[in-house]
Length: 280
Ligand SMILES: [Zn+2]
Ligand SMILES: [Zn+2]
Image 1 (cartoon, rainbow, N blue to C red):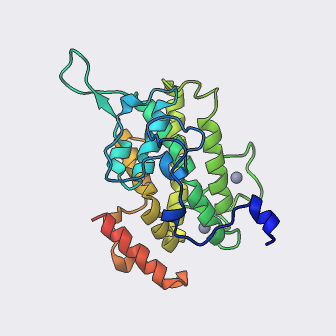
Image 2: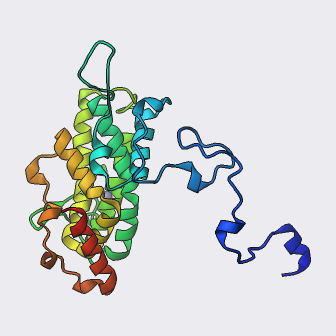
Image 3: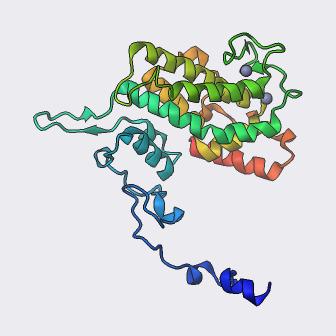
């Protein structure tokens, strides 16, 4: 490149990043809003060994959403911390009290799951097509018809369309000011909608498990999203036990995971080992 342009655009010199990296122009602040000039690496707490930031320190109108997001960024595999409602102490009460309404907690978690599920949907798009999976089956016994349309489409939505439409529909519903006008409370009728959203989202995971198992294993090892969903559902009774058809991950024996078709055997083996290790 000519010297004239180089004077304006400082090109990388090949020096190691530690020497060429200038300090962040603003003091890293992982406890509040992002300030102009903050680097991505300084923006959020991503150390899984760091202590959990107290819920009380989140003071915006979106405190619950921000608290859950911070927990997921800190360690997406620490499912128990992520789904546990934060507690605190009242002045005149010795027992800890929950600081977030249970239904609001579930609503915000489902919102977060629809976001974190995007990486699953994107990965599935490559493996799950109208020709590989012409209809939506989550387990061997049931065929599911997409509920995202006023009239059932003809032909019915194939699996990847169902998954995409269910994800879009869930986000639209959870962000609807008609059904969820407040971030502080959820009406009884809207609480039932949360159960329906959960059932539809779960089917997408079940489809991945039964039809694209190597991919499921890999994605779950990276995100622990199904474990989060399952634990959330159990703790807050979103789905009945019979509908949760994906086996417990501890029950997955290595020989049950067929990685032959993946093509990338080395990657498959690595995922398999991570999954077994994480859940023992
Ligand atoms: Zn499929
Ligand atoms: Zn559809």
